[in-house]
Length: 517
Image (cartoon, rainbow, N blue to C red; front, side, top):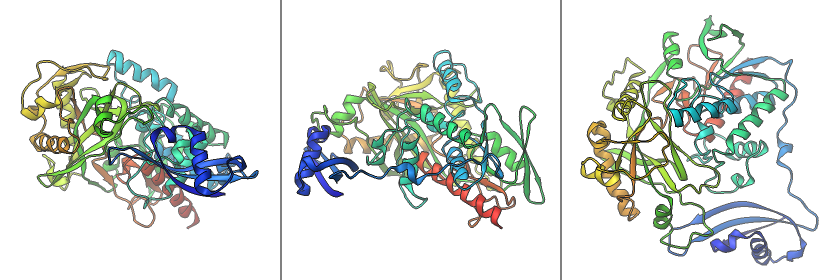
């Protein structure tokens, strides 16, 4: 194998043969001796007017081939092995189940929502008819919230575990190989449903179980251990250990745990709005008006400090759309997603304000759910100001900054529709005042970001969980329940698909240690 680093133009990087010829020349090998290759890194450098593509390419010569990734992962028959209940099929739950199989345990996976095929129909009804199913929507159902949120697979830290391992497992279950080398990999919401169903099939083929429309309503605890999990349909699942991977939107789970005297604590999170621009406008700003024929849709990342709180972009979706993400009737919120190609007319991102527990309007250190209550209040206000429907309160960005109502609204990707609303007025001042200053600062860094064509939609509230399920640092279990292992975003220890998946794997490994005691 010969490994070489390249700096190419976007056009050069676009064509495989050109890349290989450049790599062969840089490595000093004969182009015709190349029998295979592997791209190991790829990133766009848009810091200067001349856009460049940085690549690392591994060349395999004279019959050599890269080793198959599948050899590293063994999923045997666990149908007769000790069973572990996994609650939730988001990335934390699915990757916990896969890791349990590797470790020789039988996962019994419970999911309150429907399988991904039926879930698509429920989401279509939410978008077109504003019919909300509280157990099957953009947050609940097979694959969790990540299934319909673009599938961004980057994380800010590798301290949680092996990021490459998570990417490889996604690849083995159907993701394109570009997630293995791109600097900011993503799968696409059009591709994720098939990958999620492939993971489910892997669990079933290995002797595990997956139960849909099976909402956990109670857990039985005796002598500091969970003995069984009870569900809404009257079933009882006996459990030697339970992995709790219920996501950041399962309010009923937090209330159940509080009733069971399991230690919870409020944690910081962020709330704000989602901003939407025409994709070509963002591409032009980001790429300095360069030709974008051979470039991906631009993805920006912005952060500023306003009045001692961070204001930053979150879940940026190039060439994507904004979607309704409520999980309860009488509330509304928005999120973003994009397909693999990222070529929709619009680009959007959450622009949010950091909120610490002491900032909550109803902060009470004795009430671990006070952040959740603050979050729900903003979602209630959003629902009311959207006409008590799933329509989104909206405002031109320029009007939001100037504190005036928008007489007209631009077109939007948001299917349920928009309602012109004074978001600057009814959104809590703690948030809106900082957003205004943050947007002004972002316009200095991306000139033209504040534009008449840009729209803000309210509200972006589910950036992460406002509650943490306190874990023992050594065992990963709840402090007073030795065989209950909370993980992922819902536990307050992760913040995205990759970090949640890694946390789910860690929970499975903690279960193994528990069984060895």
